[in-house]
Image 1 (cartoon, rainbow, N blue to C red):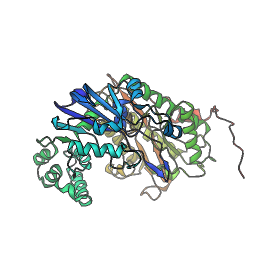
Image 2 (tube, rainbow, N blue to C red):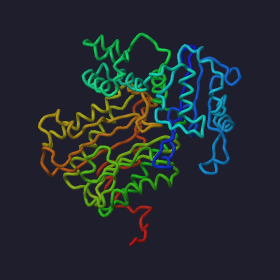
Image 3 (cartoon, rainbow, N blue to C red):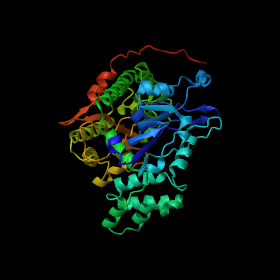
Image 4 (cartoon, rainbow, N blue to C red):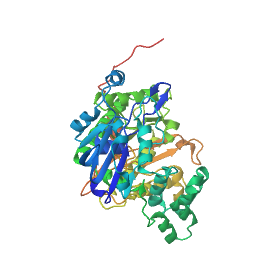
Length: 496
């Protein structure tokens, strides 16, 4: 990361805020993935500084990396758990310099000496605790004040710059519509140079100048994110070991649930079984809210309610992934609760499977990131046309409205460049077909939702399916569902 910093530059990365669930109960803390990636530190109220050239911090010269952590506090730790403290962070995590966060304001950092101050999105929802003078809100305020960040600096400009670079040239109509809405919601953004220039542009050349302005700002909320996109897109061997574990745990969850699946189960039963398997294998969390949709619910792409009481014989779509030591899997399987696919369910399922195979075939180094998506779209469009579900190929988007791939890692939708695929990338391949009731097709297809999602590592010669242990073909799924589960016979007493 330091090697990518500009001369006389500093990078500033904040820990994630603690978020409140209700009253005096907070959500389980989840670290900012960028902060986790750079430090391994898993606690709140912290800030990391990386210097291009050695600097003096807290009176200590020669510092290139400085971490300010929440201090040890035996009284608080009795209630909320052990803290590393500065000494622990320095010793366990190998940081060159670590000290308590209360030292940040008086660390003597010569902010005026930096030509560029780079940062990722500044936390905007950190609560200011008057009893904690160096909490995250105070750290951000100190940074803003000491670094001279303009009072009207809007962190949303970071998101805008990223979207302009990714979609500004290829999707000008959609980008202009997005910016127009943004300006209506946030009038101050109308004065942002890139936004103003893009909305005024009438030619591709003018749009390109708005996307890549020549002027470099001293306060840069975009470049650091782009550098992290580059770094995090290619996984190290250590990262791959953690990802493989998370994915194998998730695949095992799919296997055990398939063996146990019955028509009298509810969606919550299925969710609970997946998540029990994760915990049994040592995964600390889910990588995202589990999606378990039976029948019509399987046609809702990010369905998370999971409250249908009986699955009956509708297909159940299970998009579930374990998070292991910060790294998330993302594996989807669709299965019939009775253990056998009906003829119509089988036709849609095998079309999605054929699309996925085409997507896998497009997974090779040097290929465009969108190549797997295009391959799956072509198969789905032709297949739906052949089945009579659509009348024109372009109508396929009604039933396959999402893309086939995203990066995977510390985030389930991980950082990445979305450029050509490279060895070390881990991406999903996840085509789907969703036919809700009322669709303009034969009602026999209604309420069938199928998604098959696997996690693919791009290698020097092609790809490796990291989630291959979870069966994908109709024959393999039906065979596995006939086998007994290790959890068979585990029956809780009925509560009257």
